[in-house]
Length: 553
Image (tube, rainbow, N blue to C red; front, side, top):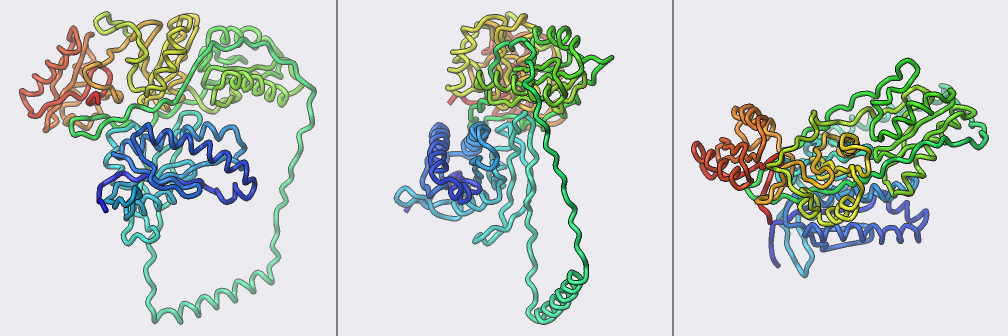
């Protein structure tokens, strides 16, 4: 037998017995399909499945970062697949992850690490992830992930409580869901001499409750339901087709856990402001997100001139639907949503359409997506270079291939926005560079739940793309924990001035060194290291341009 430390991943399906009882053949077929997805993600993240039983999967990973990133990828991929099924038939996994000392025997792993991972899986929400404190400490500053501390949990067959954290998963609209806390209070053991008293008290209470229920008439309120009357087949408004857009929640590359690597913990998404109210009986067309100039012209002209019974629907991918001159509001609502969803489905967009306006009243509840400050693009000949898909930062190879196949040959104007967690969005064939950058930022921001960054416009990378070290996140000096607190404001101030290549290095004491406005990447890195060495030791580079960076392999 061989002992080792490993990150242990445990997953199984919530409500699996019910799904099998309702439709065994269909459930088993879908389980095989979902397992292919899970197995593929685990293999790509350098994991190894060491045991399976029915719907359960046990796997080991070389690091906690690999395990958590893989778990997030799995849950987000399966959530998209589940959208094709009604809620009662959705097949959702719970996942638990811990780091533990395990024993390897004939390829199988045994020990408390495996048991704790299984118990954490039981604490996870449906479609969620629950991790131990050891895992949280390993990944908190290495992945753009939010956690909810649920405290010490009493779990079966584990003698000491397990301190656990829930991973905050993204909703369909890109915002973060707040995990439901499942903290279990530890019950104090009752003293043996108190049992007779407890039994007596319970008996008296039971008799009293029974008498009360016997002599009290319980009333139940009836719920009245009304059925909507059928409406005639409505005429669909000829709203313009949306400009092609592509979004994908692509996972960021997995940062290594070496001491020289530093990333910034992502802040919770900025609260999204409410949607604009209608002004003077018309929709504030310029404030409608995700759409292009043709859709804005349609809203300003045909839609504004139509009668009261009209509706406009959209989704974050930029697909729209509209209905004008309908017999009633219900017909307008249904027709606009149906038209939008058909367009989205035809383009294989995973996003659902939602009603934006009913008549001239904005009813969209999502509000405007988070956006970065302007200017969104700063052209700098020193750092710009031709767009090459294989050099796109923070994407896996599969996502880079997709960008290469779709973005490179697309018509201008086009752009790609990148989110802090590796999400990206392409807006293709827009009417102008201004439109394409706005649309890609809006959709990416809604998708990621936080402000994104324009990385490429047409055929050019418009931000510095590091090549000496691997980009693995967005760099925010004001919140970067590797930099000593009293130096962060000065770093922010100096980085905000000028153009060219910038780099930041820190040493063991967190004292920063800066390489600013350099003509090339190597010069910026060398200058930052030399500056850091003046007042710190063992300096290493943590940021180049707008990215945090780590070793290339």
